Length: 519
Ligand code: ACM
Ligand code: ZN
Image (cartoon, rainbow, N blue to C red; front, top):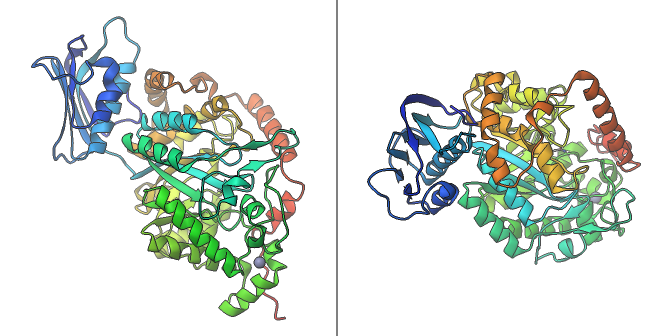
């Protein structure tokens, strides 16, 4: 059956349903009719024969699709399931055929492996407007992803209209140039645009998870409000990449007040139950030299700067708890050993670095984990680093997460960071078709058959063309070892050139084990 992600159960039957000018679609969910409109008669009343009928019914699956010679039915207990059934139908219909548009009779009983199937788009390093985000939502929903995580605040730009702290978007959304190109780069989403995106995503059963990355990666925030930094000195929005040391002070109550205002306003804009607080790559250098940060540690009885990060994060989490949101944090937030138990953790670092701590979080705290391992889920790295086959074959429930039955795993998410991705075309090219492999790991049972996956993938990629989304041709997604070596080397050299000159020093201080002095 030519569907990606592979359905839970399917069987072929005798016969074929053929679409005609009379084919009618009836559904309690208008989004379903719109999705399949090209094939039906636009939702006019259904005729007795040759019709597609969607209805809400209790079944122990996400949806059940039945294709017979003169009728297609989709039943599901929730609207989301009806939508997923329509997506499956759309993929079946997009397979190239000679002449008539039809589907072989079959039954599909389908349900997802994981509740969370996400894609992250970094709109800070390069800004992407509403039209591009809508195309991404269209594309990921066609593979049954249900979360779009927008990375909205970073050193190189702040991307939301925030009326309680207006300088954030007025000053923080524009940088003077990018790595010496001399061209200003900027952009942010207005409140109205956010509303439009949230509604657009919800119609496709995708929730938008906002990320305000704290306390590191906040140079754009302190460019807007320098008094929120340790030194109070004025600074600019970052114009190059790598790790920046300038960030929020963890010892100033002014910062906690601003964080509360910001999180409250952003939480109001995004109805999603999850809210991402970042927490990755926090260099400790500036805090180590800040009297206010040191004083805060003495007052709170904190021994290490890692604990200062833990204390900061838990203050931000307390704000989200009041707002009824579940926080998600990058895995570095575990290193303080004091992360609030309500937070889910996004596991991105290598097993060598984070594996032991993540394993403990799962075994001892039952911590919920979203798997986003850099290798092979970071799609800013080209196929030379992570070929399609390696993405497909990666089992998210690695041994430290309890293996294939790991019940702590909430799901999977593939990020596209955009330091080196400045156009929509390149963005889609990096993401697709590898995202389809992540969709399959997030939805389907863990058995793998790469050949079968590629065969099905080839048949369904037409849905992306229809959505105006380009992708890397499948046959180029597993490059040979020599070309991989050259591409990886060129990528590494370019990334090093585009990092700020102090990035290596700042990086080294991320895992500083320095303790508070007795002064
Ligand atoms: C990350 O890649 N710094 C989450
Ligand atoms: Zn400070």
